[in-house]
Amino acid sequence: MNNLDLAKTANEVRKGIVTAVHSAKAGHPGGSLSCADLMTFLYFEEMNIDPKDPEKADRDRFVLSKGHCAPALYSTLAQRGYFPVEELKTLRKLGSHLQGHPCMQHTPGVDMSSGSLGQGVSVAAGMALSAKLSNDSYRVYTLLGDGEIAEGQVWEAAMFAGHKKLDNFVVIVDNNGLQIDGKIEDVCNPYPIDKKFEAFNFHVININAHDFDQIRAAFKEARETKGMPTAIIMKSVKGKGVSFMENQAGWHGKAPNDEQYEVAMNDLEKVGEALCQK
Image 1 (tube, one colour):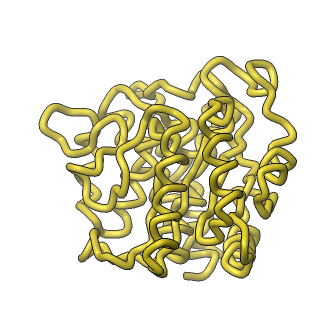
Image 2 (tube, rainbow, N blue to C red):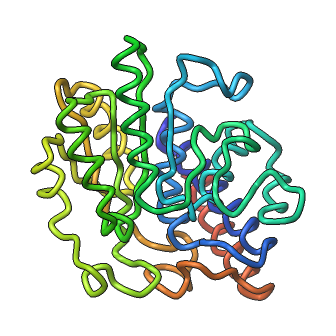
C-alpha cells in the first residue's frame, strides 16, 4: 500500500477504536490511538499473514504486550478482514469474542493472550527462538508501552533475545510519554530507552510513529539486520487523531460519553476528508 492508503486505513482503524470503546463504555483509547499507524503498517504491509487462514504455519507472529490496547488490535484485524467491522461494537460485552484483553482462544488473528504487562515480550522472544530452533522463516513482532517497560520482566526478555541473537525478532516501544498515573518520566523514568536496548545487544532505531516513510524504512532496516534483534522506539502522540484526547493522560483508560463520541468521530471524519482530497 502507498502512504496515502495506509493513512486512510489507519484513520478507519482509529474510528473502530473509538466506536468499540464507546460501545463498551470501558477500555483504553489513548494508547490504542497512538499505535494505530504502526498496527496498520504491520498488518497491511509488513507481516506475512492471511485472514482466510489465521493459523497458517509460516505466518509472522504479533504479540500485543500492552494488552490493554486491544481495541487497536481488534480494529486492525477487523479492517484486515479477520472478522466483520460491526463486531467491534461488541467489545467487552457478554458472549463477545472481543474481550477486554486479547484472547487467542476466541479471536481469529490473535497469536497470544496478553494483558499482564511485561509478559507479552517474553512470550514473543520464545516464539522467535522457536522459529530459529525449527529453521522456520517466520518473524515475530511485539508492541510494548513505554510505561510497561518499567516491568523487570521486559529486561529479562531483552537480555535473553540479545544473548540468543534473535534477528527474527522486533520489539516496538510506543513512546507516547504518558501512562495511567501521568508522565512516564515522573512515574518511573525509563529514559534513555534506546541506550537501554542497545545495552542488551539490540539494534535500535528511533522513529516518528506517525510517519509512514520512517515506519517503512525502520522495518526494512530490521529485516536487513543480522545477528541481533531490533528495537524500534517510536515517538507517538497518545490519543492521536482525537482533539480532546491528544497528550492527555486522563484518556489512558476511559470511554467517551455520547457527546464526546460525536466530537471524536467528527474529528476523524475531518481527517478522512482531508486525506481524500490529497
